[in-house]
Length: 491
Ligand code: NOJ
Image (cartoon, rainbow, N blue to C red):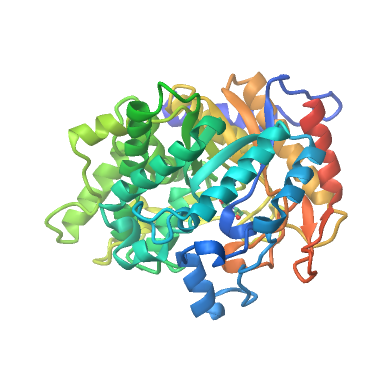
């Protein structure tokens, strides 16, 4: 049988065999970890308090409120900067084992550079981390969750090769200060999103709209920065600290829109252009970019009359440095897309999507949520986990985000169903397919600032009343369910 036919048969089986297990009690291994996630810009507020420098998101939300759906900014947001002790108590109530949060780079280094360290920023995260540890909740810390110091964006942001060195300097400050009390570090959150939307489109504040060019430069420097941080950690800290370092990559499953070979191949190419773009260099045996990206972008660049490929090349040393530079694979997964082979002729205008050669859609029958892009497709997570297992020799995976946005109210049956249904497929991936998944993180602990969507989309297990002076947090029904799951490890 041709390999793509084997692929289809296998995946059809993976989708089907979870149905009907409703009646059984589904339990995860007792050492499986449950947690929740947030990010600094989305919950902290205190945007200019005690020496914090502005980030690119501060600039965007202040200068261009018209680009935000509800025209609001998170200058105060959920005010977690002041209310973090209350938030830790919410975590305790949930009974979760770890909390994934991010550090605001410009709270530590106001203009992004390490010659000026903001002591109040250092203090704030010490207090948060100590409070977590005191309550037996492991901190999992993301170094970069999209809030680049504005000063660094002014000279190119992630397209400037020097940024990798600046990021290493920043990471060193973090290891020096918090290394002994943080068990797991995530260098980057969803580089696919911020490179593509920030440098290839208009979905983020970087607004360098150079798809097929600047997005590739961004990814290139992010991968270099990630590898350099990992090697710096090995050289300077590994002997004294007990911690692990990984990266969080977003992978919405890409399914073929039909059983035509063209669409099946286009879907696999789309996977390589999304998850593979970042994961191949770090987790595959040979390292470097996926071959199909290299070939397609080199060829199309040539046809377009460029004298060199728009996809940059790593040096042999860089390939070695990045290859194997992660102790775990952080996976963010929310939804699934369909891919159809594009029949469009190559134009002279560079474009990531033209390079990829697939048209992206979703089935209208898939259940909707409050986010247009997020349709509920629970089986996609099992396929994603299996794909990663096969592509990268079964790495240790922790699901660093999975969640859903629904109405603002408290009776959120849909969220409980979403969590249960996705976890069923995660469980099958572990027990039936031997995927090496050791933890799951719900996004998010509480309602927060959903980037360009402002406060209009609610992902929280806790509802936040952003109009109240105390930013009151109220548990939704789903928080009871998730709390039970995280304590008993059973659905
Ligand atoms: C992924 C991002 O990491 C997070 O910041 C965002 O709020 C959620 N997805 C939901 O869109």
